[in-house]
Image 1: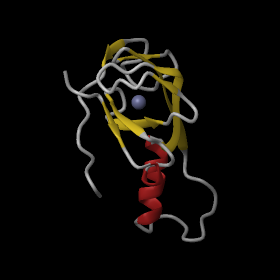
Image 2: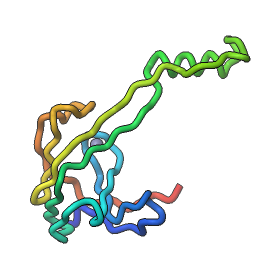
Image 3: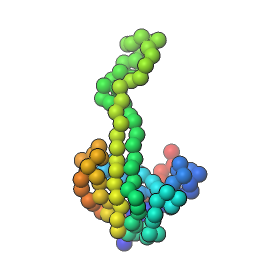
Length: 124
Ligand SMILES: [Zn+2]
């Protein structure tokens, strides 16, 4: 079986020492052993407590507002924020499977699936 985690230098990944590919977000999330307990198994990891990831991004409206502002259609002196939304990805990882909790933004919420094999990191 293939590893589902990859070990990374913490100074390059916000203090995370391991990353995994999240099949719900299509991006990677991370953890470290300072905050989380990890069974040390890269193929069938169990990590606790849960991993909670939140971030803010433009909503559809915010993207439109930004695009219009950027294209010069709006007041150049415009202040204030563009409309945004907060996204949440919240999961437990047990024995190589990822259990998404009900507060996830994506369609795998409430489901438990296998973690995909770890992919190489693209330097960008
Ligand atoms: Zn996720």
